Amino acid sequence: MATRLYLALALHNHQPVGNFDHVFEQAYRQAYEPMVAALERHPHVRLALHYSGPLHDWLLAHHPDFFGRVRALVARGQVEIMTGAYYEPILAIIPDDDKHDQIVKQTLAVERDFGYRATGYWLAERVWEPHLVRPLAEAGVLYTIVDDTHFKAVGLNEDHLFGYYVSEEQGRVLRIFATAKHLRYTIPWAPVEEVIAWLRSQATEDGPRVAVMGDDGEKFGLWPGTYAHCWEKGWVDDFFSALAREKEWLITIPPGEYIRDFPPLGRVYLPTASYDEMTEWALPPALSAELADLKHRLAVQADDSLSDYYGVTGIPHVVVIDQQGIVRMMKVGSGEANAKAIEGLIAELLKKPAAAP
Image 1 (spheres, rainbow, N blue to C red):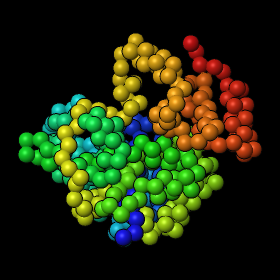
Image 2 (image 1 turned 135 degrees about the vertical axis):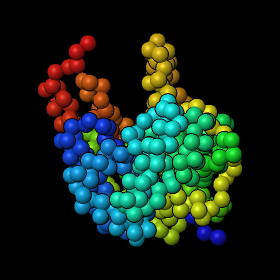
Image 3 (image 1 turned 30 degrees about the vertical axis):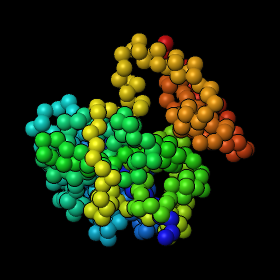
Image 4 (image 1 turned 30 degrees about the horizontal axis):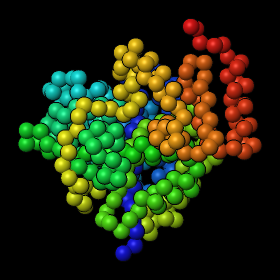
């Protein structure tokens, strides 16, 4: 039997209530529209998309033709639309009635405007609490995606996460995927061939393994430096073309289709969790400072644990942080092109005043 791996991609697109029109427009032109255009050019790439309620409303008012394009992708079975809580709340902290009504509101909007009955749920900030199974299931949700961090908290490791698990609460059932941190940190940052090589290393003859990458759609064009990287230099088209070349063993599949076609890996009860960075940001200030100090003191280790944690996929790995503490660029590898890009950005940033203490 030949080796095989399924790849389930889910892109979450969101702008908050009250954001400026020009920010919505910039996000549309640099990230949302280019991704749909890329999917139109690459019909073999199948994935899930999520548009939050505020973004959905803005698109409907300003780019109604966009819905027809996405609807066409849905109709040909290329794209699955995910639902969510309409206004993108941290689901665990709002009342159950509000949970239900916001999810139903978005599910109905998706069905009306995209022609798809969404059963997958995008969990805002992947903030999970065990009791969420019941309200999600009661709102018609079949599956959601959280981080691999959540699963590691109950003793599972990366090799246990190439599939989905079933969880239950008071007789209600929910299917849960883990998004692979390795893929979140290498797509779209690492060279395409490196991403494909990692995926190939995970392909086996042992059943229908699926690698999941669920992350922000804005990193494909809106995050600093990513428009040039993803679209002008062609990373996304190169990646999608590579997926076509490797289709004999690497099969893209929307998550909802995967759960319809394949059984779960088992049952799981996940603890309260979020992605690694969020668990750090949620700490009291003193503990956050203590953790930061500890991490810096342990920055050199003999194994790959720190490299994996920080998403370092090659050497040199350069991160440029501006005066406001915002990551402006990530570059992996040496070479004149990288050096010029880094030098150019630093020169530009040095012209700006430093942040106030």
